[in-house]
Image (cartoon, rainbow, N blue to C red):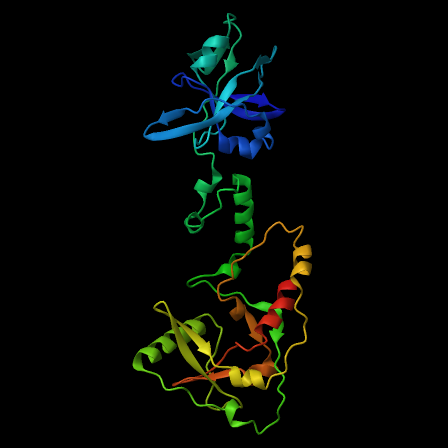
Length: 336
């Protein structure tokens, strides 16, 4: 049935099989922001439901108003707050049913009577007892995420809304990689043509295993539309070799752009000082320490600089990025 608690409607479940009145902690967190200030200490007890054990963290008193067309009834029960229960609303057990003289009747419609007045009937609606924790209703891709135990349910849901809104930034598998617009990298060289031999280097010798890994990584970048094959009729001005680095049995494709970095003008964008960055983050609601998957791949190279960022491998040319301007580029991009 529906009752009024703190000027809001809440479901009240009357259970003749429960020996005490209980409420789930998750429900209080979602509907009563200051519930912890009203929490009363109690002896720690364990409760069983089917094969599960639930622990109590205290009790809370909530005045309930049961509406009636003639006159309302006020109840003042004390509920045991269970830490890991999943109940949608408040559950009134036999402890207060006997105290207030609540009897349940099943005629044409379910109803209850309170006290000795059997003529005054209150309609009783059966609410389905289901999980109140909304995190359990999440799609499978979110269920694998791990959240800090310090976060409350509302905070977790708020965080998930941000992740959903910016889901393309965390694309995985076959999902398309979103591109950042308006912050393409522009490269300016300190030398003119003809370029020195260091800027036109042949590919490094590679073993059969390394070649397979290079091909695997390049095909992945081609599928993500991060790089492209260069046609036979295109003029290649500068080439830099690629190499494979190994760490803990995993490999990574890297472009050897050391020579290009020596001939590239550095960006003069000032990197902000840590105290200034912390001041700007003072009112931030979300601060992330994770890197977006292939984050730098989401920022493109300007058309005028594509010829400077071509990497040469055994079987093809590819146009990509990885120069020393990456960190400077990331600062204005993150602000924009």
